Image 1: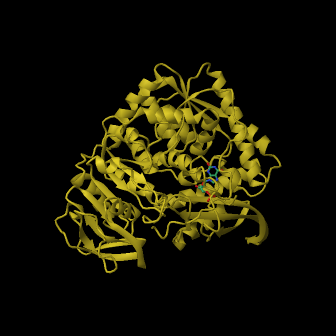
Image 2: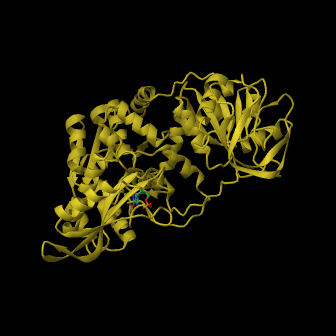
Image 3: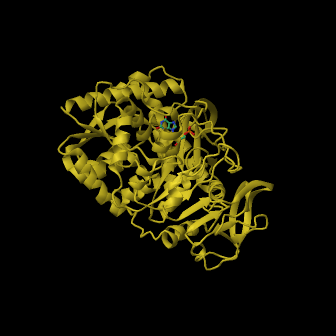
Length: 561
Ligand code: XMP
């Protein structure tokens, strides 16, 4: 049993929290309304050709997706499937081996989820991790019991079978990370213990047919050589070639998009974010001007953002972009609106109206392209029963264009965010766009506390520009998850020269994070903070005080609204 599994989240909509980008949230909603389920099924049917796959069987561990990601980092394609997925689906993936994930259950309890028998009958290698190890021990004739002592945290792994392919290049002893209560009492016939820790005489077991069980978690960063063990499993045990590269992905996708689209017309909304940018360039590479991008300036973007996006796509990549400056409409709609959720809703509804109007101008359109990512797909497939409090709406859509019946193209639906960035680089997008920090759909509107006005937007843009500029100069842009300024509703007294001032208070927020679900405030060097503060109060006349936000998430959120 994974002891640390239950880390309940208070996040209302994890899809957005995971990716942080506007387009995922927005278009998932559009997709739902437009029959996204059909498109998901169609995409499933696309299959993955002859590409080799390590199939990760999900028993509900919080790390299941991480295992998948680690394998892919080794240039081997991995896909996460539910533990009761039928063989037909697995077979279409061209499986080379299985990994059984951890999970919250106890293998000896009645009703505990088990691996389907095709896994053992296939003759393919299997790697069970934590609960996955206990499952395979039990199913193959061993015995699992509740451990006397819970083992949690770091442990030293002593390797007794040093020539096992799993341990090639691994230190002995090696540091590993444990999180379990149950243990293997007796191994199934044909298995032997090949490594142990102080508390686990059978920390790793294996047989001669390439079936292994690990009591620890190789996928987490606290097992420093865990990725090498997973790589060993994929290459040395399963015999994978390592055909998962972004170059191959582009070739396959271009082919698939051409087949799917024929001579149909596609639209895509560019947001300036990395996902929509990558989708647009990939589709453009496949079908050229059959794609039209719609770029809506909602008046809530950062300084120079509109020009930069426009230049990259129209001028550098020669793409067809319909640019709409809808600033006035959005600002009118936001007049008098102060409550964060009402802001989000107003912006979402207006966006849809503008988008729909623009799409209509194009005549008959057949497809809507969107930047759905793999974690979104997994999340929407598995989150049906999860109940969590709604903290923020996190999407920009209120009323949706039901009449617009479009088929979906989601070329990134099997990719992780870091793969999308690599793909962006491979497609020749500028570094700056590929490594862009997440920016929320409602833009600067949720960084202005209270009513959004033209004047306040300009103040915030000036302050924010300085923050970004200094962060980039200090080479902190990429290591930080997000960095930005917030314009508060507070005014305070200051003194400039011999004059009293009464100006706005600006908050500076900089956080580190892995996925936006949790975040920590960045321990920024004082001199960078000093330069930011100095420049803001000197260069933005309406501001006379700057504060730095030193709260983590939770209990705060990343954005102030
Ligand atoms: P919070 O503020 O909830 O934000 O910690 C987590 C991540 O989501 C982004 N965010 C949004 N993204 N629409 C979006 O597309 C929204 O309404 C929204 N609100 C927050 C935020 O920037 C961070 O990356």
